Image (cartoon, rainbow, N blue to C red; front, side, top):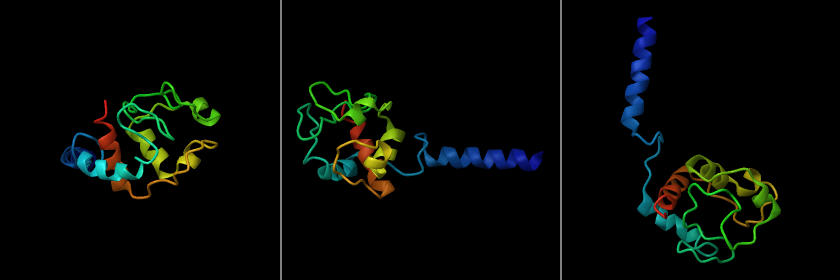
Length: 125
């Protein structure tokens, strides 16, 4: 029992040391703004639509629901609400996460880039 309690305590200490966000990766919104440059060709952050929908306010939004944008059937039918976890999974491989979506971007393979981009997207209320 003592070993279990010590192990549990060690896990709690490690979790607390990693930060309250629950992510092992440090998230840097400023670095995420740089990563966003890869997205800026198709997506805005000011509410305007381009080839893709605006990403202003994307956190907490139902996939395929930004007003005034014509989404693919797959994106409109996706039962996804964008949060840190769903965005991370989507950004690894968009076509695999929501099959049939028409976004041409192949994904961000680096976990640090995804974490930073998501931190940046969280600033766009």
